[in-house]
Length: 205
Image (cartoon, rainbow, N blue to C red; front, side):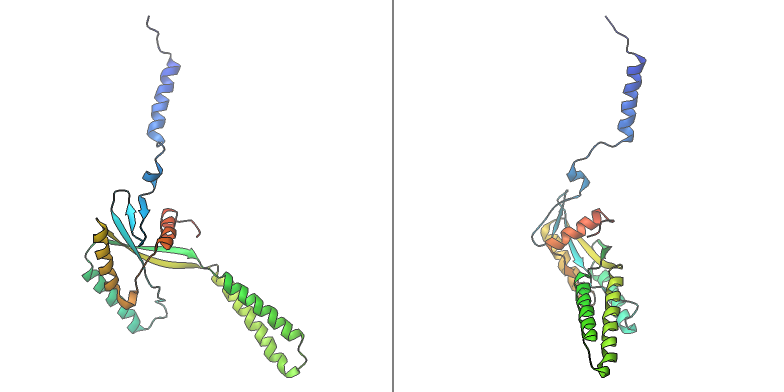
C-alpha cells in the first residue's frame, strides 16, 4: 500500500535542504585553524605540512629619524627585496602598551615627594620639593597616557615546503635585513601570541 506524503512533510524536507545551503556545517577545529603545531625553534607547521618562520622587525620612529637614517632604512628594504626572491608577508599587529611597573614606580615617587614636602622645615628647599612633586605627577600622567596608546609591532613571515627549506629562507631573510631591520626570530612562546592575534585581530593580549 502506497501512502501519499503529506504537503507538510514535503515542505519540511525542502526547508531542511535550504538550511543546509545557507548555514554552513560545523567544521573540525583543525579546519578552522590552519596550523598544526609549533616546533621548538619557533617554526610553524601548517595543516598541509608546509613550514613558516616569523621575524620581529625592530621598530623605528620614522618621524624623528634623521634623513640619513631614513635613507638607510629605504636602501635596506630595497636591498632585501633584491636579495630575497621568495614569497614573504609583512603583518602589522597592535598590542596594549604594558605600563604597570612604570605606573607603580611613579605612584611611589609621588608618595615620597608628598612626605618630603610635608615634613620639610627648610624654606629654601620648598621650591625644589614642590618641583619634585610636580615632576612625579607629570611622569605618572605621561605613563597613564601611554597605557592608552597601542604598541605597533611588525612581523615578517617566510615560507618553505620543508623544514630545511624554511630554515634556508629564514637565514637569507635575516642576513638581508641587516642591522637596520634587526630581524629576530620569534620564539615558540611569543609565536603563540602572534598566531592568537592573527586569528583574533580584536583580541587584547
